[in-house]
Each structure stands twice: as C-alpha cells, then as structure tokens.
Image 1: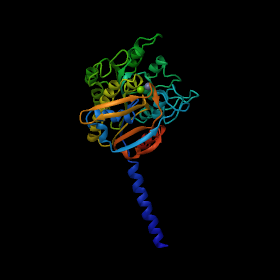
Image 2: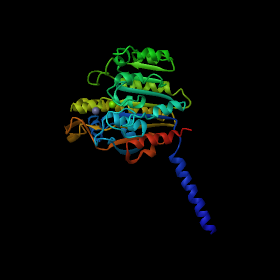
Image 3: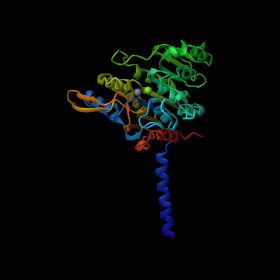
Image 4: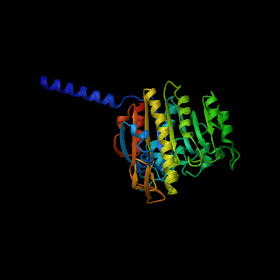
Length: 355
Ligand code: MG
Ligand code: ZN
C-alpha cells in the first residue's frame, strides 16, 4: 500500500512537470504565413539558396491538413479563418461560420486581453489572409466592408498595400480618416512608421498590391517586420502579430517558379528576423506555416551545389496536401505532430493562457 502511494505521488509529479513544461506561458506570438508555401516550395528555396534557409533553425516541426468545411481544396479565406479562429468554414468566408456568424479571431482575443497586435503583409490589407484576422464577412471579395472592419478593431500596427480600398471607395467613407478619428496615424512609407510615436499606426506602402520581389520590392517584408516588432515589444503584456508572405501563392497560380521561389526566399528572410527577435526576447514564439500549397509543385531534378532546380507544376490552383508548421522559441514543442489547421489556433491560445 505504502509503495503504491509513493508510486502514485511520483507519477503525478512527473505528469505535473511534463504538463507545466508543455504549457509554458508565452508572452509574444509571431505567426508567419507563407500563402501557398508547401514542402516543395521550401525545398526549392533551400536548393536555390544553396543549402541555407532560416526555416531550418526551427526547433519543432509539424504538419496540418488544410481542407475547408465545404471543399477538399481550401481557398485562402477558409484557410486563413481556420488559423485565425480555430473553426472550419466554407471557401470565400472571412472569420465567419457558413451561416454567417462572426468568429472571434486570435488577434481580437489578444486585443481584448491587453496585448498589442499587428499585421505585416505583401498584399492589400483587405486580401483574404489578413482579412481573416480582423474582418467578418461572408465574402472575401467584399473589400469595402473588409476595409471598414479595421475601424474599431484596435489593431496597433498594420503595414501593407491596398490604400484604394480605404480611401478611394464607391461609398462616401474614407476609412483612413475614420481610423485617424480613433487616434491612428496613417502613413504611406516605412520611414514614416519608424519616426512615428503614435500608439496606433497604419501604413499603406501601395495603392494596390505591393510589388513582387522580382519587380523590385526589395527588403520591405523583413524591414517592416523589424519595425513592427520594435513597436509591439513596448507592451509589457505581450503581443500578437501575423506576418504574411502573400505572393508565394501568386507565383503558384501563375506557375511562375522564379516568382514563387523568390517570394519564398524573401519570406524566409523575414522568418530569420523573427527568430532573432525571439532569441533576444524570452517568452516569444515564432510559428511559420501556410494556409495551403499552391501549384502542386514537384522538384524533378536539381543541384544544391549550384542552386539549380527543375520544377514542374501540376495545377494552377491550391492543392490539398498537408502543409508544414515550423516552430521556434517558447512553447514551440506543442506544434509537432499531425493535426487539422484549426488546431493551430487552439495551440496558440493555450500558450497565451488568457484569463
Ligand atoms: Mg494570402
Ligand atoms: Zn491562392
């Protein structure tokens, strides 16, 4: 009898230790989404970079399934919604159930719990992925209402394209002015963000989508990520930021391998920036993943020593293959395994441990 009590006590202390380790509280989460970035895109970036990739610094790797509520192959609306809200919805929906009921997003939950929040993207701020974290609309194409949903969101910093949807609208509203009334500083270049001390900042670097890397976007994504992290870190409560390599997807849709992989490599640079931040700021988690793969990319020949790859696309759309999850920093260990895309949200929430 005595022995078994000791055994039980010992067992429970082991269980407790394991539990407390796996639920270590996270202060900051940097969620990075490579839209359309599957394993083939990552492998191609590795090869073209001749064996150097920040993603390989990841400490724990997982895979998740991406199907939406109504389709085997997801779109970026349902894919983004799954990551942002922990719920499957139909394709084209933005943070809403198929019955058009709003779903609370991780960004909104972070706001409600006193954290700072941000988004940095290489597309228009109204595009499906960023929209899934801040807007609630039955159609991803309703850019008027998606832009309007930024009002009252409380987001502390956003940087991306799409000024036209905020300021040159078919209704009488000027969303930038409405945001200014809420105390936002709305600016139009990265330099101004750096110099601005306002608590809430919105930055439109383009009227439409920002340029691609091949068209000369330069180091924008890494630099904007660095600037945003620098602002967000001042909140002692912590922060949530979503950073998207939005155009990896577009290279896949157009079966343009150079386009898709230059965007993947660019995204990987921003990943390195985020990982460096995590090194310097304990309590920070970096999670890098995708909403789905785009292009059905296959690598059929190549040479790592000279960075050559022969690639073939099997689709001009998204595919249903599982996508990778790369985790780094505090709490990274809970992201290993194979799960549904919706689980990512629940894992992040568990680490934040909001009261
Ligand atoms: Mg996207
Ligand atoms: Zn797409």
